[in-house]
Length: 286
Image (cartoon, rainbow, N blue to C red; front, side, top):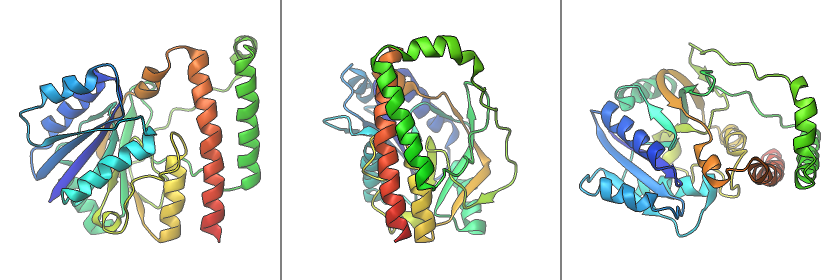
């Protein structure tokens, strides 16, 4: 069996090296390729990676001439993996550290039993040590989604007017803390999966050209993919037998260091992606 690991790289050299090395260390059986897609890094990290792995035939490099965002950056690698003849394609963030030995063996066992189209492992956050899979299914209520868009538009304005930091300072202490999720020990079918590591099976690869919706730049990829799978009759699966660790947000942080600039980036793309989500929900219902 042939498995390709698609890693989307943007500037954060250390994370990408750690990700590659974790795959090399743990995946000792099967036909393996590692595909690094550089999303137009301009800090010399791409060239450093090329030089470091120049003599390793199983490590492939693709350089995008511009930053295509999360979805389309990964789609470039997904297309390349299909050309290599991969039976399984794992699309993972560069801030993922793989810990399970020989993922292909665990994936094949799950596939034989559940016949999944896409699968997500147990993803453990290295920030709060919570377990990120499976995620809560995002609402399909158009009214609620439109209110969320309006909320982000207000936050975007407050951020531009330098009011956001003031409100955060005085009212932030009243915000509820996120509950840290514990591990789900049972396999779960037709659940929404976290986008930092998604494994695509032959039942998806043979019919589809994209890993994620090509219209988004960042955010909402997971709910769109989940709703698409439900519409097409593709089974999603959470598999607790595979474990990876997630550092979280390294690529976004590498784009914007200042809190205000990062928030502007987040709010803008959340609005755009929510609007795309609404469009797809209407399409799926028709």
